[in-house]
Amino acid sequence: MKASAPADVVIVGAGVAGGLLALALRELGATVTVVDAPPGNGLCTASELSYGALPGWPLAPTPLARLAAGASKRWRLLQERHGDLGWRPCRLRLHGAAAGWRPLSAFWPLPFAQVDSAVLAARLPLVLAAAGVTRLIAKVESLDFQSASGWLLCLGDGTIFSADQLVLAAGAQCRQLWPLLPQRLRSSWAAALELASFPLQLGGPAAWLPVSFGRVGLERRAVGLCQPEWLVDGGLVPRAEGSLLGQHTLVNPGLELGLVPPSPEVERQLRQGLAAQAWGKPLAQLPGSLRQAAVAFCSEGLPLVGPLADAPGMWMFTGFSAGFSQVPVLAPLLAQALALEGAPAAAATRRLHKLGLGLPG
Image 1 (cartoon, rainbow, N blue to C red):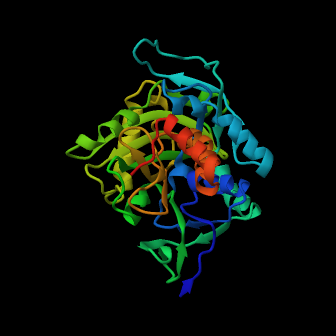
Image 2: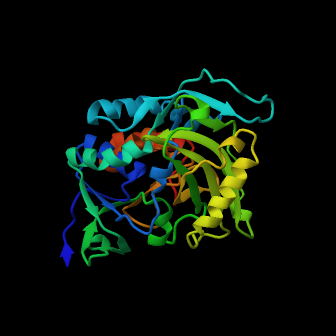
């Protein structure tokens, strides 16, 4: 069964990246279709497993980090336009120590907010529908480019439709759809424990985060790995009526995602890693359900944002190291480059270059 092009832009992936890009495109008047994979196989999406942390200060001395420090302003604007998306101010408590730091034990008086990933997951499909975005629930089986009709998407139900402008925002699934992506785009497995409530011993809900995340360093070393490597970062954030505890990261060598890690072993490693940390030891045995997700990242730290030179009409929006703070500030720029013409599109492209992203080719 073949259908005609359904929209100005087709986005594969409807998580935080695909969803916020779709809203930004609609603000510019573009028609948009998002293709969202059906739930299944017991995994959650990377967006659903995210801490949703929004630091109000730059995490690095880079143009992108300075821009991302203003993500809360964009989330507030989105909520004013579309209703609750889970954004809220949140108390922050840092723990652990790093070079030049002493161990911290008090709430840190820095501007900080959080997007509750459970609220966002429930609300985003409704918000997209209200904004006029067409959402298809289907697995994209393959992509094919034909000069006469643009990109052909073959869906799991046998439907085939064409798109002149195609955006891959499917996280760790992007490479499976188009293997010729830059090699700095890689994937990992993430896991956390979902608790039914916020631990009473820590008082009221707040974000407890480490001074630094080991995951970042592991991602930078990914290119040189010869065997799988895992680590555990100790963190805790509110989520819906409960909370998310810990962050287990597994990176395999090479570009392939690999099989889903066995849940019992991942949970054992996660609890073991928490117990080895002074902050996490009292929490390591709390009852909770393990949640796992495949995650995309870029080994150089900068996401893939822009068109692929060797794939006409294909754009990338993936590989974020801090998606909930980077995506909302980058989505309007990519939308302008996609949907506008002439000087406005060129200005958006220049802004992306100035952020140090470049446009992958």
